[in-house]
Amino acid sequence: MSNRSFTAGDDREVAAGTKKRTKTPSEKENGAYTVGWICALSTEYVTAQVFLDKKHGRPEHVSKNDANDYTLGEIGGHNVIIAVLPDGEYGTASAARVAKDMIHSFPNIRIGLMVGIGGGAPSQKHDIRLGDIVVSAPRDGKGGVFQYDFGKTIQDQRFETTGFLNQPPAVLRAAVSGLMTEHEIEGHGIQDAIENILGKYPRLRRKFQRPDPSSDRLYQSNVVHSTTAPSIGRRALLTDAPPTDNEVVLTDDGAYSTGSRSCAETCGNSPPNLKIRQPRTEEEAITIHYGLIASANQLMKDALVRDKLAAEKDVLCFEMEAAGLMNHFPCLVVRGICDYSDSHKNKEWQGYAAMAATAYAKDLLCRIPPSRVEKEEKILYEG
Image (cartoon, rainbow, N blue to C red):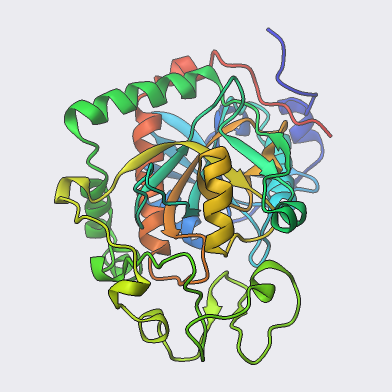
């Protein structure tokens, strides 16, 4: 059986040039772990940990130059390694480093997941709302995530595609199909799963419970968030140029700094500013969408460009890390929607969106027999 990429070593190589880790080591050898799970943010790392069926502790050893923080555990009988990007680091390069080190330290990984939050691309075709889930789905034999050149794309207002993420293993794609069918017949139970976790970890409720539905506002695409005016020039939204006095500032965590003024105060809730959408039933509160995810090294935060690009490629979600895993870590990408890829960004929905994505990922893993995963090829890192 051929390998997916180039050699990363085996258990003996991992043990030969390793460094010791303190704190409650796992009783299992690194080679026992077959599922690699990558998070970009600490919020996503929290939700991944609390959805574990059982925690194993820390790895006893990792590769010599591996700086990742790991949590080990079980989901549905699978031994899972969870890693998070370093605090304050975002984008494709950081994700690639984390994946590379993970594969070197855990040479028996067979399937990969990247689970977290992303920005939605709602349209007439796709009624995407905050708290919904987008799952990468292959198109035309290519992976469900494609990388685009942000600068050229913004300048020309058309996608400059630079590559596609390799398709995830067939076992993951088959499980997605099975889960889609089950959800169509029986519903998904994502909200129940989240409530169960919040019941076990009540201190998480404030940050991770579902926000008030009234805070899910989809503004007209020409309404741009400003501290002083109903609309602003789009220069700072599309480039790295310093903002003028009339423009808002993007902070390190991807939120806009507007002092004490909320988006409702700044942009208003009047019908002319908002897109009117039909209320959803309680059962439809979380909708799962399957399709293309666009990934680049910069944040998509302009609604007019979002709409144009989404229409061109039928993109459902924008994010910043998955493209870093191209050709190295073929995985399924699951994103909870926390904003609309526009200038009205805030952190209110991030915790809940991460919970929703994690609940889906766990449901997916529980459909796959561990013995089936062990029959997959090892993921070996090139470079």
